[in-house]
Image 1 (cartoon, rainbow, N blue to C red):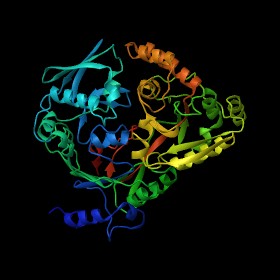
Image 2 (image 1 turned 45 degrees about the vertical axis):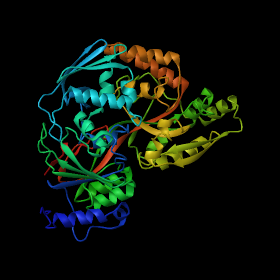
Image 3 (image 1 turned 90 degrees about the vertical axis):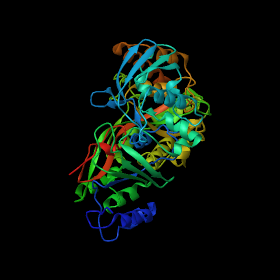
Length: 510
């Protein structure tokens, strides 16, 4: 039986872990001892954890980070270089309407079965056809997927697709042999090629992972990872300080100095990729009226939100894209803060007496979301808009009854990207998703053209033109990017990524 450095046996450790619920994190400490990460176990107190074992029924970066421990993508991103590198794929070529991927050899799934091109085809087919998949649009233009041999996959698209790597990013490969063996129950036995193996999971409880000692790549230092969902910011901070966790995400900015002064933990932060904005769904009134949407842009001042809520820890968006995104246009300027102008536009749109709207948000997903939306509501009020705040748990907010079902008229959201095409295609291209229901033939034409263009400079110019159309039509109110803030015990060596993935297999211990 394994013991912790403090002499507590593993059986007792697990017993304490089972008893420590989310509520206890905010008020209780462990009985007489303090936990730090060891090579035996690391505990991640996460704002959002898995809400199912369906590998494709999600489309959010924190979920991708959890799944990447177990199942892996063909490619990943080097954010410093803004380029892709191979994971399960060794190399690839763009050949007009075809993308050819050469897979690494000698890789095996957790059950010992070999990873081959058949698994890639099975995974992509499931992403495309599974009714619960929220990732199918990434492959909507793929007309054929072929396997000339066990280690080659050829994707054929309707037209040349210069941004296919962006579509393939965060698409994870699952086992065809598991699907053949378990059928519809295969998701209950996650079987990947990743550095950690699935052990157990409970909805709103713990996700437990064990190191894959036969992993094809560099073996992680830590044997066991426990991911515990703790939705409340204060509870995560309290849990870290009390020794009930080793890593936490979404640390409120006003807690950063407290962590830095603590002898056992520290703060880590990195400029994030997530662009926060207010989305207006054009299929709902009054947001079918461009004058109303423009009025909302004049009515909101993100600089005040950054200053007073995030203590200056943010960067105002001057357009639909941040400056660290491919396709950013430095010539685009945001609507200036002008409540008087906003009132004039609302009157011109037929709302001279003002209007009412519900502003939806998810407090367990975005830092200080409630406070942000309260400030937005106060600013809108100065323009004659009465905004009622509507809080939803992320699983509801993001699901078929919320954002991804097109049911929310007006909401606060964030979307990371390294290429503007990711956001433009998903949110604004006609018929791709119901999130905003924006339709503009000129915009669609530009996106069609840039996705076929192999010349990076020409493609960026097309993306910049598309961005100017978005600013004129105003289906969103661009706000800001923020730093991604984490708390970590001091004996863990780790630098966070800008995409919100917490990859524990990259962590080292002092």
